[in-house]
Length: 219
View 1 (tube, rainbow, N blue to C red):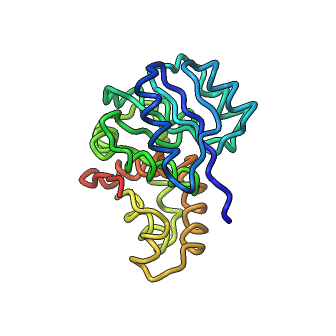
View 2 (cartoon, rainbow, N blue to C red; view 1 turned 90 degrees about the vertical axis):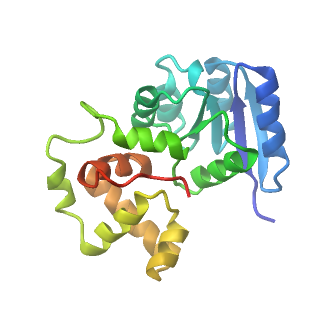
């Protein structure tokens, strides 16, 4: 039997937190390993339970995200937010968060996002992703000369990046290009290194400068 994905849930509103826990616990491949209501609780859960993913209320962040991402790099952070504040979300993604959902998302979206983060991918709600790609990015993950980084990509990597920007998973990209998921994962790793970014969301943000008309969607 495959090992379950361990998830921590941290939200300051008990009723909403209970709903997240219920949605996750109903899935056979997921297990809630801890829950809390503060950033301090998130740190304790990361240290004591070592979950694969922590679902964290964005409003609880106050400069403490790095304490989790740096001390517990194996734990992926999925943010939940009531307001689509693209500037604050963009900053959190740059500091190590791997995804973000709006609180109007369905339980199915939540489960899908957790599974994607566990697979080493990223997930951002479609409407929020569009705002992230369209906003100005002074001082963001982009370098002063992004074109230099794109010039290092091979034709195949460039092709994969053009699909990755749409929010497709490695499996979906592989199906499109008739390549194995393992091969796509290898190419994506090279793309992230060449673009000097940490995850797929940052890669899509960088690529949006070259492809301004493309919008990343979650699936």
